[in-house]
Image (tube, rainbow, N blue to C red; front, side, top):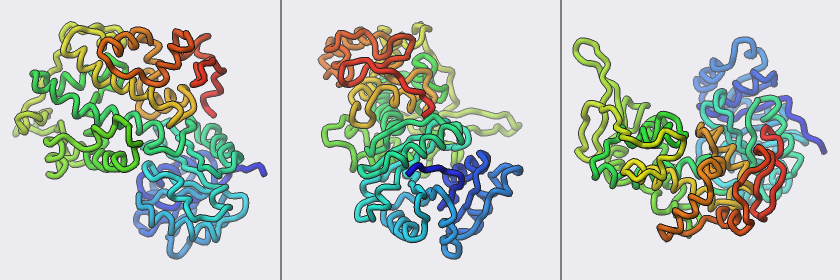
Length: 431
């Protein structure tokens, strides 16, 4: 049976649910917003564009849950608690209409755990539809099927995401943190640990952030600035989830907990921008002048922010990782380590390099995805560096070498190297 999504019921009107509802209404869909808290529902309604607000119906879970029976897509966006989610889905399954599709926006709970013990109908019609925050701005839309999900359901979500919402659809697998956050959070958590030795060598946080930004094709937030934006509280929860769900041999286990100073920051409520400061903060002098301060991770005290010192590192994109300097070694260990990590994750988290590259560009705003960046730098140069340091060769770099290939993409990016060692046509990246 062909599926079509023309109406959307969102259960949970927090940040993500409100964003999904607003985006769907702006796309011309009828939308239902439900939450346990009427004030939260009203706040979500205010995020909907004025011209689309007539498409939106609101209510509470207790009084109006039956109304989901009139909607094509039922999207759960409630608290990240498995038992609560399963209880809600059991209720929804009894009332949703035949032919409807159902999903969770969870970022951390595997679909197989949500589906366990559920009906065949539910398992056939369910997927994870993972948006990035803010939903209206971020292009990435990760789509994750379960073992029993009907391909027609995935096709309906992909079409809706691409054509109605204008998202970049990435096909991920039911693994911890999917694609974007699996790699992006590895960069952040490993970076906190690996940067310590560079701080002890005298490098300032501002310089670390500057190296791990434009020189390697990352946004200007760098490392510490990005975690300030996300919040140490969120990152701690991510780390705990990874520690439980990462495969036993995954190198990410080294980094799932914070270094001691960052843990103290977290425990003391110094979480980032949301509370006025984490690694950085803005204050005002008595005469009203705005002052930027940095929290020195060695002295554990606030100090005036300093201008980064990039020395004489190369200006060409990515070349810093080959530079014989402290900055070059930082870039190699943190950014290069993330590239190596990504190259080890096929076919575990995705079937091909294209989905991984798209997820990282669309979700974290990198100039190039990991495999595009490896091509830009030259895979053989990376392999030579890996071998010279006695590191393990990541799976996809081994595939490339065994195939006698020189790059992961060829013919102006229209073909990609698969894990089978053969080149395949790149499908339309929007679907």
